[in-house]
Length: 247
Image 1 (cartoon, rainbow, N blue to C red):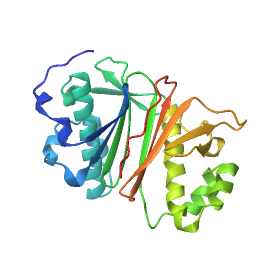
Image 2: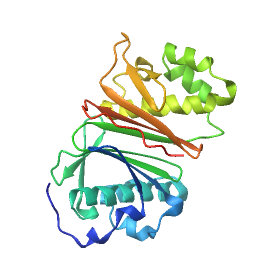
Image 3: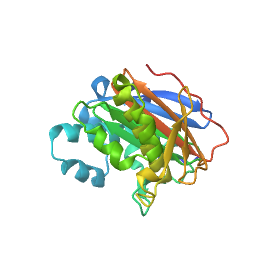
Image 4: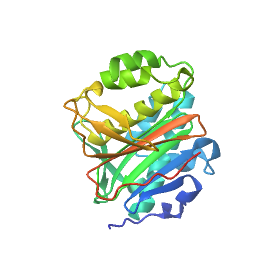
């Protein structure tokens, strides 16, 4: 593992995130901005100029604060994992826009998602990983999303869902689909309705291609206090993650 020097190593990641080990090589970190113990300027100092410019371009103060928290936490955790000062981390982007850690050089893979006050960061020792977290919104038109982006099989299953559970069922499938596509990292070369998610009981699921063959992903899903749903997709791993309950 490569190291970087820098005074910001004093940051303690366990004050900003709860870590869940899904396997020896895979960890997922959950953070809630409402319980952050760090002042905003501590996060801001870790951001690159590119990140600061992106944050400044956001339309509202709330969006700016959420961006700052999520990307600050990302840098704190990855800095600790790589023994590098958070502000010295360097990120690159694939031709489809998926970020990766460019400095220090490492086999570490990561993916991040944030929604409302929640931030989720997935880290894998080597395997491609995708994560998604979504706050349960009362205003979202999820029926339209389902009709446009779910596969025929997913639509048929969702229509059989008890109406009292329809919103939770939507977010469960939507976060799983998002996690898979973020793991693939190829933009929308594959349409969202070109992959079918099948729940297998408990907190696991399987992704299938149009031809019905299972795709090489390990999928997990869960929720936080019934107000947000999350999902993890890991590709080509021989160490299957095990769900750690989050209530």
